[in-house]
Length: 380
Ligand SMILES: *Cc1c(COP(=O)(O)O)cnc(C)c1O
Image (cartoon, rainbow, N blue to C red; front, side, top):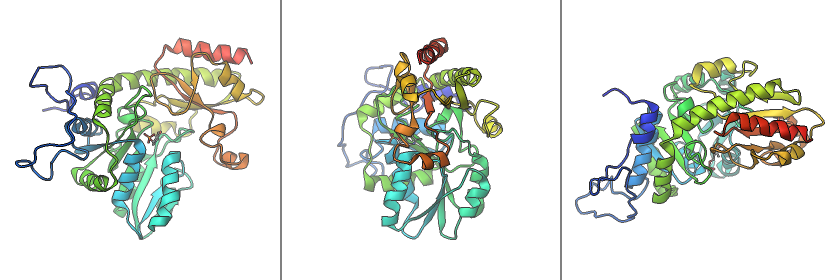
């Protein structure tokens, strides 16, 4: 059978047929105990493979063009389990310098104790990755577009490098979502998602998803059983429901963010805009080549003299709040949140100015978002 389109996969892939009542949606199976006498002991439903969990594994596998997938209780459960599934004492990993704060903390706070070595790249050029590879390197880990500066890594170049050196390649594909980037098609081994973001999409659930080959997913499943980061049946159902509109939502996030980025770039009160869909973006050409859409995340710097906190307080529609990727637009100032513990000098070194704002562009009418920014700037 020919492969179905992304919207169809979002709605139907993996769904459980309600043979008892003929209902239109997957029933929720609440059991945590199942009959075992005639069951395959390897497939006994308990960990990561209860009926509602399996829906999600099948859906993310189809969306990522992978053989298999697994759900987790959070993005961090997915990341930590996947990393530990492929790294043991004495091994080494190369990671992009710009990764999600929680993943960064996990590596620097836990790996030393476990005897796992790590190196962060200096930038995103493939040469930066190659220079860090050592004889005991086992894994290369990237995240693109990055948070909060939307830096683009050449996914195929890193995947090719990993293949050349026999490394397992992993990507945190949260920011792009499987709709805007298909890393496995570009040669990556494993795609990881915080489904708390676009896959969930409504700022009300925590979940994680992983996709890869059957062999890799089985390795992660074995580690997951030891670590225990299972997703509940109720949240599994809510995530299945959310993913039904994923492709539709992401298309609107893409057009809204492109329009916002173009509007902000022309605005006299804005010093700089970071959005991979702008020709002014450093890696626009790579983004154009490897992404199906440029995503809903952008960052911008206010002109010197405009106070970022006052600006955010003036907003009436766009919510200054943590997290991202919901249907509603939200804004966050990294200097006083995610990067608050760095000194101003350290922030400057990683390109985060005090007036930088990260904007998760929602799916409202873009005219209303522009009007909100206009009025907030006028009242300063
Ligand atoms: C939020 C986020 C995570 C962590 O996910 P949780 O579901 O909050 O544990 C990982 N990676 C990226 C890029 C994120 O934005």
